[in-house]
Length: 273
Length: 264
Image (cartoon, rainbow over all chains, first blue to last red; front, side, top):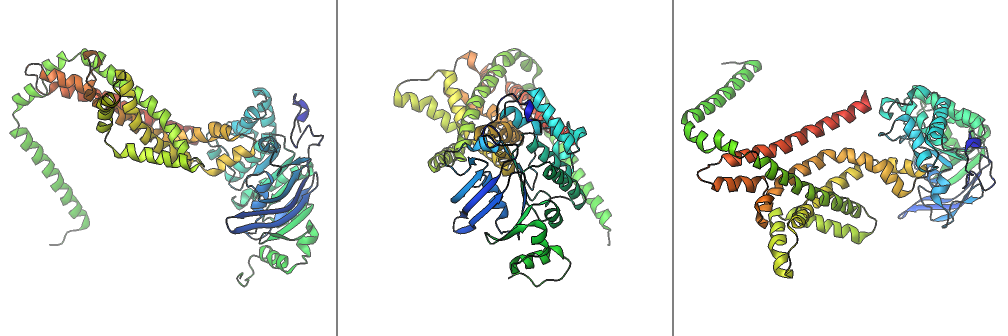
């Protein structure tokens, strides 16, 4: 990554606190409810620096909420989250400063439709990191190159396919030099034929040593790329373990039932509940 | 007698054309054309209105509209943000204001400012300030509702994406949400300017000097000049159209331009 060219020392979880490019994540005893509905019931979880952890589980199990708590898009009621040395849940924490270094990729892409692809990748560099325009554009073009869309720099988001939009969204996040990347079902809204391109980019990122926390239904990706897979259901972590092992030999009955449903979708199953 | 659907449709169209032509012919035959031209479309009297109706009346109408719009937009932005505030009393106040000024005739607001305030407090605002406040207060209520709808039409994911890139609340609003909202809001906002242009005719209630006449007042004064008939009002009406029709065209052009920018 091109951090060496950044003249100002970075702060927050990605920089001046003596952290390397990749930060670790530790979640302890996390609770989150909406009114009387308890979505997270005491989640603990850790992602080592440079590791890839995949969150799997049925819809409504709380995995997206957990992910959104990590960069405080949702505010947990209880528990502790730290990214590197930075305590996210500290009430005094500078949340904006933390988010500069935590990339997020959404299911619905959320590209800015009034900005070109290049501007999507430079706007936060300019307005948040205060980089100069030439440098921001150089970094943005580098990241667009990385996701294979350098020639789309001057297009607008709605001229791109879903898969291309998601790749731009990844380039946009990478342009901030994140120490951690959060992926919230990045391929769930995509046409099947474009899923592969997005997953390939994520594989490359993982290989380059990016810390990644990924909510996904792509079991093959989880098995091949993740260091660890966490299975959630009903707001709790049911089971976690090394990816290949958990997916091939789940211990818990709930994990087994879930995996047999997603791995053999054509097989007729008794309806849940 | 059996008719096919096609034949029936042709017959129906034929009848509609026939009615239209008959009515038009009847009007042409019954109207007293020399009188009509003399009293309503008199070219001589129309010519007399120029250049005064342009350099005084049209100019003043534009000034009153602009003054009202500046206050209306400023107030509208504040009210829209209040209405979306997480602090409940702000929301209540904004709702109260909007419901009141949308529900009361603009005429009444003009009367209140033109006569009520001088009576109650014993002082009088400057003419232009009174116009600005009276027009602006009403416009703010309508503009606030358009802006609120525009802001809410921007998907929540846009704000979340901006925040997740480290932008502050204010930065996310200014750089990401408001530019998108403005695009959505432009057509209703143009509509509001057109309404304001027409509401500016209420200024006559305040009483004013000759140099402050706007289009409607100017036309009315010209009528009371000897036997002018309605012609001055027709000219004033055309002047309103000179303002409002291009506004509509401009909006449509802007809309198709942003569409092209995004789709080409």
